[in-house]
Image (cartoon, rainbow, N blue to C red):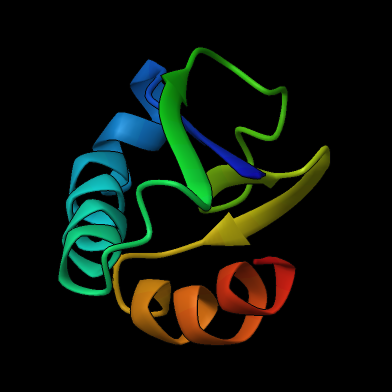
Length: 80
């Protein structure tokens, strides 16, 4: 199972973490991937200078609401 954690700390929240989380949840539901992707929120990952921090199986990425769909397609789906 692919584990995805999205930072919901103050800095990431202000940069659009909620929008990123919603997009990921929508894609998981639409594609019926509940049994392949575990998604959760997490507090500060120590990357506050970047966009929203997203941890996929232990590797941290920087994702903006504008790049979230492309990130889901290229990175999360590749990990599934």
